[in-house]
Image (cartoon, rainbow, N blue to C red; front, top):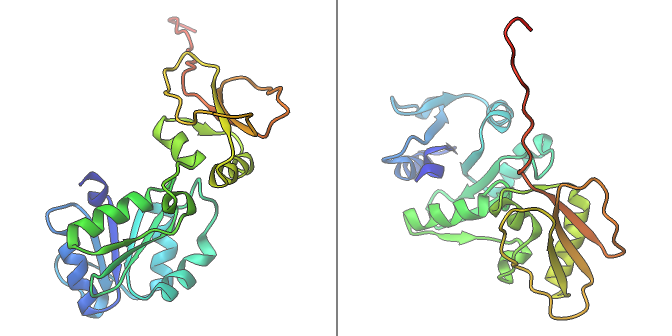
Amino acid sequence: KQIIAMLTIVPLSPAGTALGRRIAAGTDAELFTLRKYAQPDTCPFDSLSALVSKLFATRRNLLFVMATGIVVRSIAPHIVHKAHDPAVLVADEGGNFIISLLSGHLGGANALAHDLAARIGATPVITTATDVQGLQAVDMFAQKHGLIIDNFDDAKILTALILQHRPIRQINETCLHIPDEYPCTGIPEGQICISNKLVQNCSLPTVRLLARNLVLGIGCRRGV
């Protein structure tokens, strides 16, 4: 409900607006509509491209009720990186499908697609390979445990190994209690290292996940 309350819904038609209003009911979700369909509970807009430009930089969860092709063309100029892009979802105006289009993992679009689909009785459409295979990608593991991915290229390499069902190991060099979610049953071909160290000495492909367990404090003295 909290995620839905942070949702921004953008339809293009009266039927889409009706679906958007149904999704937003009982939440603080904001609903935009073309000016000609504006109602007291909606925010009017005139240009979809101008609206997307504004929302992409200021909102975290975007649901477009329109054709997927329109959404792809609208958001394409604004896509930066999976670590920064908002969650983008698409629904057909009949409320049959909720598609996780962008930032499925770090942005939370996959989870939100499931939540919204359950809310209106739709089918969530998830296409990320690890989710389809029931596996946990590196970025999802990092997000779940509040860790920061040091290098996304390294994360891609490790996630590819996970998809290939290759043995990888999880190493924790911090005092944080994080369960071992990647038990290694053979000779490891890669590793996930939870650490604060600047240098990794390992011949295996490694992704470093930075733990948020260091605190820097500054003393305060009167007159200084």
